[in-house]
Image 1 (cartoon, rainbow, N blue to C red):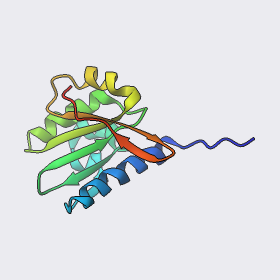
Image 2 (cartoon, rainbow, N blue to C red):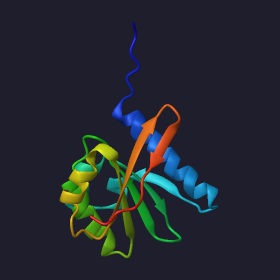
Image 3 (cartoon, rainbow, N blue to C red):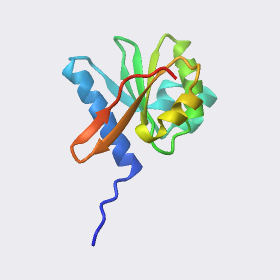
Length: 129
């Protein structure tokens, strides 16, 4: 018997693709980039493996976190982006939404749970940490 094991990178890429598709459906232009390109300095050091979907027109960045992401580092990224006039949404696996509330509490961002199944990637409601 063979088991299909989807890597964290593949799942995060699927989530990123779904976010890009949602913006495209609204005819908004976005680009993807490593979080370290969006947030500079010591904040970006541990975030280089994460991807951000960036919509320059409404100045919104959406960072896709995975099961192993350091959510406390994302709090520092939220403050850095807010200081430059950006809104941040942190997309977290639904299984980590409690961790996100704890780690990002009082940070200038919103969190949104995501999960995937055989039919695709799904998103929950935006929440304030």
